[in-house]
Image 1 (cartoon, rainbow, N blue to C red):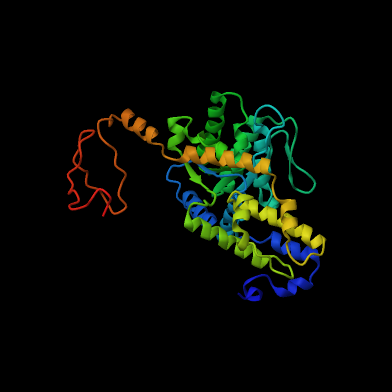
Image 2: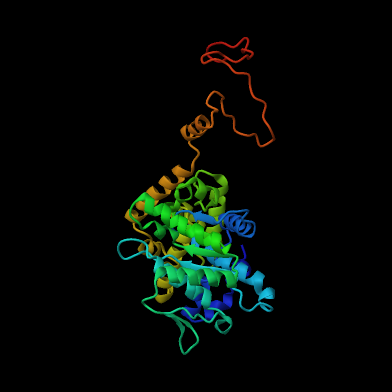
Length: 385
């Protein structure tokens, strides 16, 4: 294994510890899960086909923020030739939904952050806002007065989205939208976003944890105009997942700018357990441990250093329960499917899953307890010989 060729540049060892840490902090592994979800989300943004809301959900620490940043980077890069001719356009808008300190989700704050994100690049080409309470400061940046109402900000957001024409509005930590009292208010939250997307013609991407599950099904109309994209963890009971996770570990261990390369892959089970199979959680753990090792002038990552910076068992247990609950909801339950068939008037017919090789032939029906035609084994003794 030639780590000098496949890993970090060896001259980095001569650089200050800050440069070595910055190198690893910026390291992103384009692993299979990330690439699959990236492709699915890009396709949904480019060809929404009437969809207004895209919900991207998965466990905490699976890499959703990394996904958002990669999507935004790609949309900006693809739009650069067009921006030379249309300098007022913003290819994509990305913001984070902030959890309220108390009470319900704060829509005024949400609209204000969205306006500021729309106004940030190429300031001199932006709209001149004439609404009361919205003005330009001495630096030409948008300033929002404290008395501007939420409905006024929303109208300004609609106008800005119309003129900027982003491919999508991406909202990270979107589970904070659920900070409301009552299911009726929750439906109002989602209808407000759907209405904003419909009015402006801009698809909204909500990125968050499994708390987003069910938001798209609060009403039939909302369900029809929404889709869910699952960003799952790696599963230890799937051979391809284990191999992919080990490859991620190998990539990280080769790019740790240390004198001696640690053997992360050899401790796969330990790293999987303490990261719950989530690459984002694994990366943050290694970031913290590397920062400590560099500060202590260590030549490699020791077991003691890794254990010092791992997540607590209590926190990991909480995450594991949330992951299990989210994955269970996503599984197609047999009783749920039968309920669907009953509601559709198909309760008298036995459902068959579609065959990957094409339409399946329906087997002849038999009564309960009646054997299907088959040839019995001949000449076999009771002891199996």
